[in-house]
Image 1 (cartoon, helix red, strand yellow):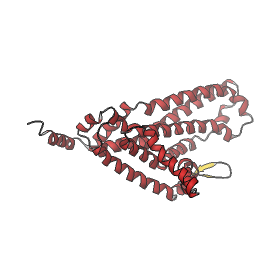
Image 2 (cartoon, helix red, strand yellow):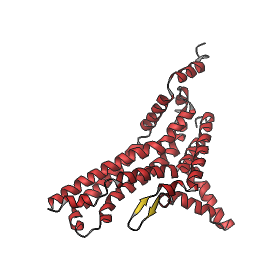
Image 3 (tube, one colour):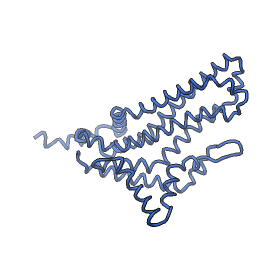
Image 4 (cartoon, helix red, strand yellow):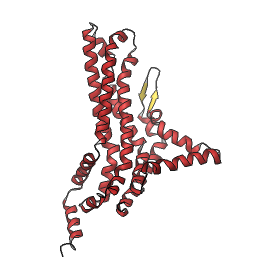
Length: 291
């Protein structure tokens, strides 16, 4: 008799737990199950620090003749490497986020909990859209601070002016630029993340092949049969155009340009596609069975 009342009990329990708390613990679940979310960026950060440690000893010799832009380049390189890592980690996470729970049949357990498919999918989507950007920013800040500390020690030990070195580093612009670019990357690649989540919820096997094969097929058909480059140009802009869309080049440097970025119609088209894809993912999870 109690088993017949189980759905009603689960529904009542679900209503008694605040949605915010359900979402929070769903995100925590993703971090527990997918440790590569933070382990992979940490590994890249460690390797980057080793390279910086080797390079920093040559800094005094370069400081006398280097331009401020060149001094800033090492800090920018750290940010770019870790941002690229976050995109790669986010992509592979999305490919496994829903497929993995069907493959190991844990979807049966998670669906028995008083958490809706909507909250579950939104928690998974928050990893590449929110969690990874925040974690990446913190990691970039730590690596850049360590770089600054090492550089300062080496320059001071060589008898050169630390104040002169510090005066050439844009301490205010660096974190602002990193935050802005991380946000731009998250929203620009939103349709890609949405597509990978959809494939993860739908595919029976070979998730990566299912994700990339349609795009490769369309590219081949367009170029060999139709003789067009429209889809090719769209794909190039989507994968490689985030920097040119989010920044503008001034006389001396490249600066963030939010006005240009938010005026780009491709940004809003991509976000609309991502919303539709995530909605479909929610519907698919309600109907998908274990593999």
